[in-house]
Length: 209
Image 1 (cartoon, rainbow, N blue to C red):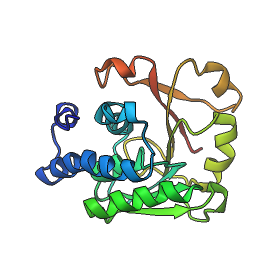
Image 2: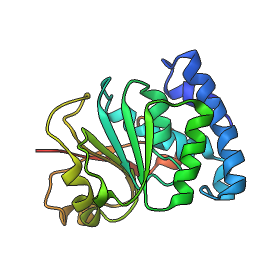
Image 3: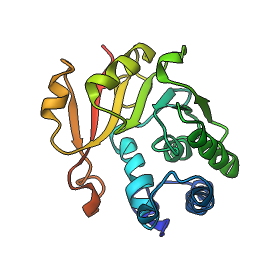
Image 4: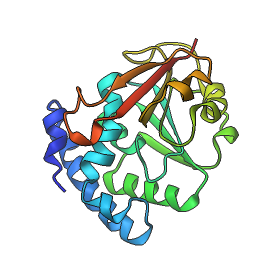
């Protein structure tokens, strides 16, 4: 696992962030040995397939200080943990209905001393706060995801894009997105992060309007 790939695509990170990204790989190895959240095969490619994939959202939208971002179905902490490192002044909430996954995120958070990341072990429908952005990574089909995400958003612009949904997904999405009856902008990740893994991967965005 080579953490220096992060600095190749995000050369402006601080020395503290560089150390956090380096420690991130070690922490995931430790936690994954106890609670499996990343497949063993994928652990070898953690920085590309999970950490850089999460950070692709930052290539599309820069979050402002004080913005509130919720990660629905955060699993082991992707994309919320890498994004919380990259945007230390943005407030993140990771939500997952599976307690052991939240336990991993809490352990990673403590190991990195991430003060801008909270977690909740619950379903998205139980969250009562409002957020500027909803992020997620291929949790379910978009038509099913929208009723969870939409009520949690508030109007505004707390980043380089209007408040809305930023979703990591791959493959041909035209039919799936059409079912939501929303206008979506699709950003291909490969031109932004030139690694073969991202050939069919996209950041999918719709504003809250």
